[in-house]
Length: 355
Image (cartoon, rainbow, N blue to C red; front, side):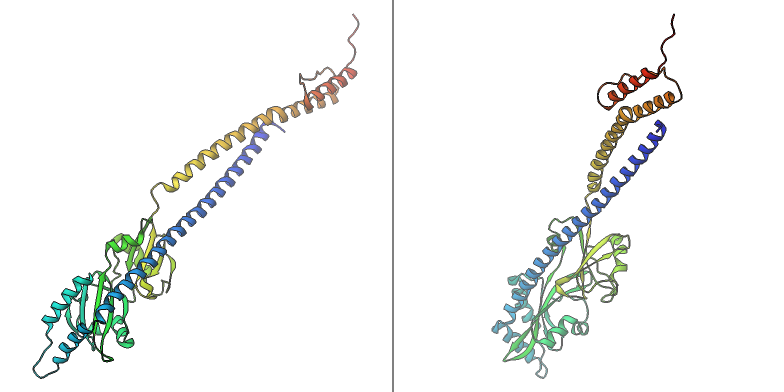
């Protein structure tokens, strides 16, 4: 084997090893990235489940305490009933005063009363829509059909809030409905993320509203998310989707309302996090390849170069050149070859001419 051929084969072997190393490293990095994403998504899901359970149960408890207060229910029911008399109307001013006091006590953002037809009576109203639209709201329809307290995430005029409607029952008859609501603001988003390296937004499915309602608002992010918000593109429950820019996102229904508003989580990896892993790998690969190249050079000098010399000596001896002398090799296989070659050459070498 010539030195050029040896170098060519060695370079090809090193290139194959380098490609295998970087392919394996890339595969391991992809596994690491996937594990990191899964961990962040699991963290977000765990915080979402805990926070949603606490917020919904807390809101339902506050609404239930007030709705089941006999004095409050009787006062509202009598006020509404008195409006049915000729020339009478609901005393909304006194109900507003009572609701304002209870809203402060219960630490609610909105508190109001609707009659059994879904018409707004008094209190603070989170909706900007007219009374007829409130009566058709799925939250009110569900409460009216079940005669039980229900809650649902609501979006209206750029605001997100969690609302609960509880029936005001007197003598087994539903006289009115109590609405209690709390706003889902930036503090809610921060509590959901809990330090996780992910961007979280609330969004409406395209089939539910003309607006995507993305909160916090981000026009660049909305352009990537809007195509995914189509009802047929989103899973009914928890799932992963690809945004328009190719990034992966996790979508989860808000407060268990499958098919309704969703929480979208997109991981924003820290800048340079991947480079921090790649650079040491490149350095390690460079060191390994340098050591391998040095080892191949030593292998050539100590083994293949001497094999080439031995083959050359044997070929020239076979051609009748008996004046060749063995190289000065000592010890090991090289020494044994030198000693044997010298002995054979001495036998075949013609004696020196007589002087």
